[in-house]
Length: 331
Image (cartoon, rainbow, N blue to C red; front, side, top):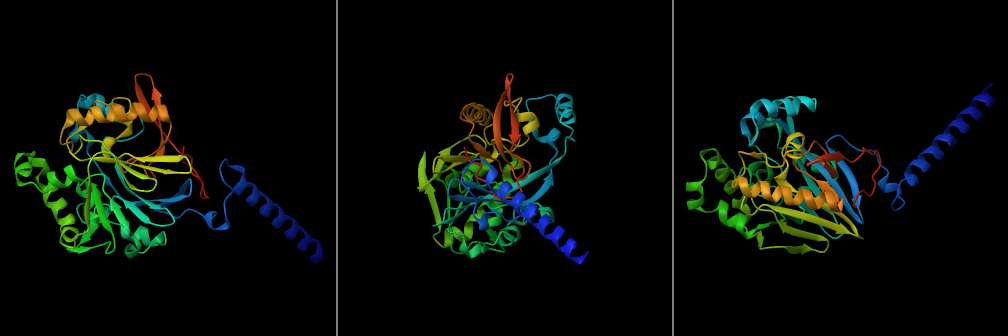
């Protein structure tokens, strides 16, 4: 009986081993090394874009009263839009950041909310460490824009959270948030954003670690900044490309996919120029629906990775399927 049981255990183990190997090698794309087959961890999500290792990091989630901040749709219709999607109108919203490990550099896109939303958020450094990265190992932080939920994680108590990193952002973005005249002319609801943004950037400015760009600019091999104004004057996308595989980080062109994809003219109070924000969103969605490239969204439900599809007169969001192992998902 003991011998029989041992044989059963050995056979079962062999079957599991074969199933595991089949799972690792079945997907399209390159075969995965042992280091790439680890399980996913709560709060982080790993994928490959060509040779680049991409780790999505959650900073937290926070409820957003979309019926109070969205413009361009009747409140009853807006509530119905969320209800039809099975969501409350004040649903939780993700705050995602994206770490690109090129093998030569470790580049973080956005830095989370720091303390601006309280204890719900500001967990980026924790999740970064869970992912196996020391904040001191980050070489660069690329900001899509300077709103606090993207920039406030740069600093804590006036000290740089990423002491060896340069911070990259559009020159027009830096100029806007550092301008007293722009602050004076901004909406009352935007005044605190200037305070938060300046506080986040201050220690990097003092250390000479701010780098600006203008127009479409290659920042590093395989990483390109693309102007996408409207949400803020210097709002930027970032294109990531390796071995012909691509991903675009789209910043804040989408706050609520349930509404702004079928109705891309709907704007949010946080937009500095709502008309321009809508134009930028529509143009970007058209291009992304045509290219089918992978999209990464800071406020799309974690991990915020998927594709834009055409749907009637508007668009729809197709999240990538969850994978327990790390796969190449770039297009």
